[in-house]
Amino acid sequence: MPRWLVWTLLALVSWGVWAVFSKLIGDGLSATHSQALSTIGLLPLMLVLAVAKRSTNPGSMLRGASFALGAGLLSAFGNLAYYDILQRGGKAATVIPLTALYPLVTVLLAVLFLHEKLNRFQMGGVLLSLGAIYLFNVTSERGLLSSALGIALLPLLLWGVSGFFQKLSTNHLSGPRSALMYFVAFLPVALGIVWREPVASGQINPRIWALVLTLGLFLALGNFALMMAFARGKAAIIAPLAAMYPLVSVPVAILFFGERVGSRELIGIGLALLASIALAWETKPPPPDQVCSNRPSNVA
Image (cartoon, rainbow, N blue to C red; front, side, top):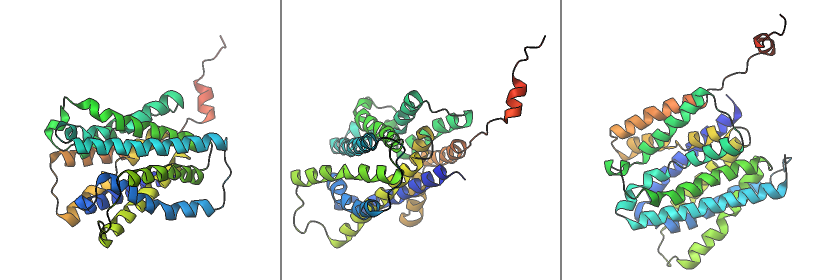
């Protein structure tokens, strides 16, 4: 199994656990406070990355750090835009599933600007994964045909470009260094949220604190694994595969929370499994002697 796939699966599992803890918090904390306070959960991994032995950087340290910081800021502001949609309610809530299609932006940018090539199986896997991601996140039939689709474009674009910047960062920095700089960008955003919306004394009980810190830790592990995958593989494959973390969170919700799944979720699971196989399907290049034998002969 290629190492990029191992790291991608680790990101998928970590984000699946993160989604479960998000559900456990429920209404105990506002979405913006959840983002701000969960940033504390990033600190242990940031400390480990800061003191770890430095790896050799393949390119410009300044460029790599700039791309990583930019990716972190785009991701954080994408979260805030997403939370703004949640607070709007009504029709805005029906277009939330479209924000889950952000890997499409990363895929397009990687193919256009990094000239990443996908074989036929992987191209099919990208399409299947986007369908699965949408079905996992759609909340009702109205979400399929909403007149307010444009509302979801901002977080979709911000998250998609963030993924592209993460890949660019790993072209210049090692995976651990890229991840560290990515996490650094979340700190000023978290401080800004708390300054603008202070948390009242006694508002958060010990259970919520434990959940929100665990939330941040698994979010950090997922993004660290994603950076390590980007350092070893193609963003056009890794981004949609990692975004199928409901493959983890949905079964957990069924087993431990007694939730029921409908036809959309079942179809989404089937599409996601097929997409996972297709995305990981790497065709081997033909041997040199076969390439030579296929070349046209100039002999009359």
